[in-house]
Image 1 (tube, rainbow, N blue to C red):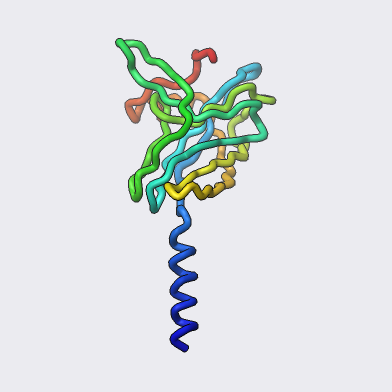
Image 2 (cartoon, rainbow, N blue to C red):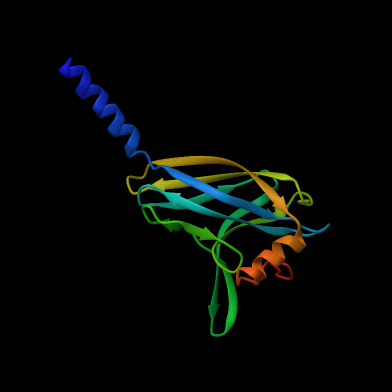
Length: 161
C-alpha cells in the first residue's frame, strides 16, 4: 500500500511539474478588405516560469511575437524571439505593447470570425506545452474604442509591415 501511495504521489508531482498555462480575454482585431496584418491580444498566466516561444495560425502566412515600445519618442515595433512568463503573474498582450502579429493574412478577418491560434510555451526545463485557442475577432471600431479607453491607442490600423 505504501508503494502505491508513493507511486501516486510521484505521478501527481510529475503532472504538476508540467508548465500550466492559462489564457483569458483573447481577441483578434478584425480587418478591412485587403489588409495584410492584424494583432492578437490576451492575458497569459503560467504557474511556473516559462516563455512564449512560438505562435501559429492557419489564417496567416507568418505569425510572430511582437513588442511595441517608445524609442527616442518614436513608437517602434519589432519581432522578439520569446516573451517571458514569470510564474503566477499575468502577462498582458495588448495594443501598444507585446502582442501576437498575424502577417500575410490569407483573407479578411471579419467581426465575429473565430481565429484558430496555437501558442507554444517552453518551461525552464525545455519542455514545451501547446495551447490550441479559438479566438474571436472584434470589429475595428470596438477594438479601437477599447484601446483608447484603456489608454492604449496604439493599434495597427495604419501600420505597415
